[in-house]
Each structure stands twice: as C-alpha cells, then as structure tokens.
Amino acid sequence: MQRTGPPSRRSIRLTGYDYRAPAGYFVTICAAQRWPLFGSVVEGAVQLSRFGEIVREEWLRTARLRPGVLVAEEELVVMPNHLHGIVWLTAEPLGADGGTQPGRQRPRLAAGSLGAIVGTFKAVTARQINRERGTPGAAVWQRNYWERIIRSERELERIRRYIHENPLRWDADSLHPDRWIPGGALDFLVVPMAPDGPSSAGGRNDSASVG
Image (tube, rainbow, N blue to C red; front, side, top):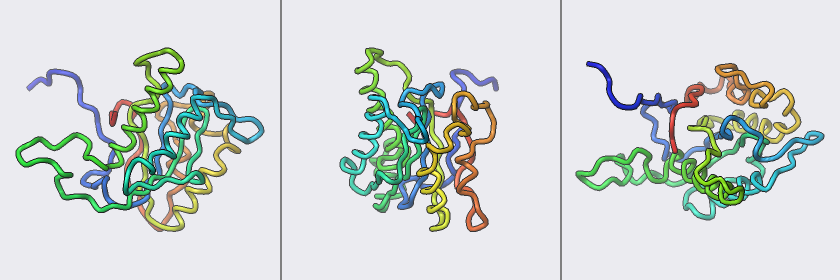
C-alpha cells in the first residue's frame, strides 16, 4: 500500500527506554542551520550575545520550575551555535503510561520526560529570542537533539571535562559552521565512549522532531 500524508520521522531515541527514568543525560542542542546566534569565542572563552544569555538563563531556570530536575552551571556550556548540558532526573516515573488517563491516547512526549523538558526549553527560548529580534515564528533551534544516558562515574567525568574545555577547542569543533559536514563524525558523541558502557542512543537525525 502506498504511504499517504507527510513522511514519518525516524526517532533517534533508545528503543524501549523510559526517558522519565532517574538518570543523568548528556544533551546537545543546535541552533537552526548551526547559525552562530548565541555569541562568539574569543581567546578560548565564550562571549555570549543577548540571545545566548537567554538560552543560559532559561536552562538554569529549568530546575527551579520543575521538581525532580537538576541542572548545574558547571555542567553547561552555551557555544556560538549549540549548547551542551547535563540534565539529572531524580523522580521515579508515575507509571508505565506516563500518567495518561484511561481510554486516552498516550501523549507523544510523556510529562516529565527528557523530551518534554527539552521541548519546553526550546519553545520558551525561541519565543523570547524571536520577540527580541522581531521575527515571530522564525526557527531558532534545529529539530530534535542529541542525548546520551550517563552510565558511569568515568563517563560523567569525561563529559564534564568536554563541557568545560569545549570553548578551547572551538576552532576544531565538529559543529563549528566552517567545519560542519552533513553526516560527518561528531566529536561530542565519541568523547563519552569507553569500555565501561555501551552507547545509550544512536547518532543524529536533523529531520526527527521532539518539538
């Protein structure tokens, strides 16, 4: 049978995993078209634009607004065209159905899930940025995001070090506008890898949507 309607988007999340589960998640979100909207790097230090400040402030505000969610300033870096941050979910999920009412269709993103948190963050920051620059409805973020479930202390330390040192490596960053290669290797996906744990979720898909 021939498919009708818009093409489906392939999920890059780990099949069968409950993204409301208590864990640490290494998250990367890119600006639309990888445009350096959020600032610049000068002598190894990030100089945030007003839009970059909005992104940073809203990320750190997430923990104050959402019970069971923790983020830390030292586990965040806002780069010119992307951010890396660690999100800690500390509350047990309400149930296998994500709190869905009996007889109702399960929501696409379960309340309290990593996807819901990232989706809300992207929507709020996009509205604020577009309001300030007078571009209502314009794309601020690329579709989807990358994430990795942090599986060990060793992996956590490698990720924290990567976040801390990211501005120093900006000229060689795989997400730098001058170095980006569609379908190419992404350095932040390789950094956490080690013999002490397999990858949690696969690579990349710019066309997949989480809001």
